[in-house]
Image 1 (cartoon, rainbow, N blue to C red):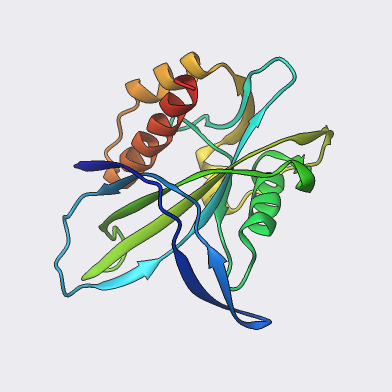
Image 2: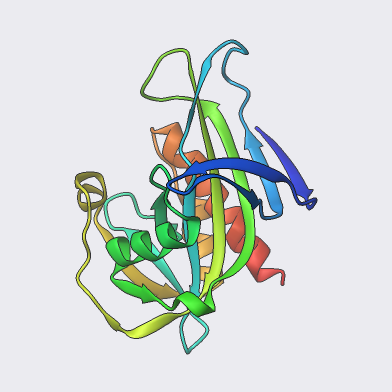
Amino acid sequence: MEYQLGRTEQLDSLEKGKRGVRFMSRMRQLFEIDLQDYEEGDCVFRRPSARGIIFGDDQKLALVYSKKEKYFKFPGGGIRGDEDKKEALIREVKEEVGLIVIPESIREFGSVMRRQKSNISPHTIFEQENFYYICKAENQMVEQELDSYEAEAGFVLRYVDLDEAIHVNQAYKSEDYFNEIMIERETKVLQMLKSM
């Protein structure tokens, strides 16, 4: 596995949306995970995501805990088609943990590119740019709206300190290498937050 730290340059990319073609600036890249376990000619499946870094009043971090798999991850998920990244963040955090993100509080933290062989489709590269945002949430909560995968994993909201989340994730082992790479990514972001 290869980690590449910090491309901080700002890049412009084209994105097609409801309003036609628009330019948007990419956030700084924190690091990249590229397993290089795929063939160069494989097709690429892209699934960008938005993830929230939300600290509570007690400075504990709001994280998703999987009761089944026993790991912590940042709340958030896939960005739909032409959906704005911040809109996806607000929607995904609400669905996964029932927190209502305060839009004015959203600040870019950085992105992590993940690239590896797909665990679903042969001859396919799974490419996911994860956009992390520091934000605040309202004090009130709503009911979670979990999909079948999330419900089966037993996703619940937990407020934990960084050390506890890092410790739990470092002990995580799975027969599903796909999940292991996801948790390695989340652990590295947690460690970056701790070193700030």
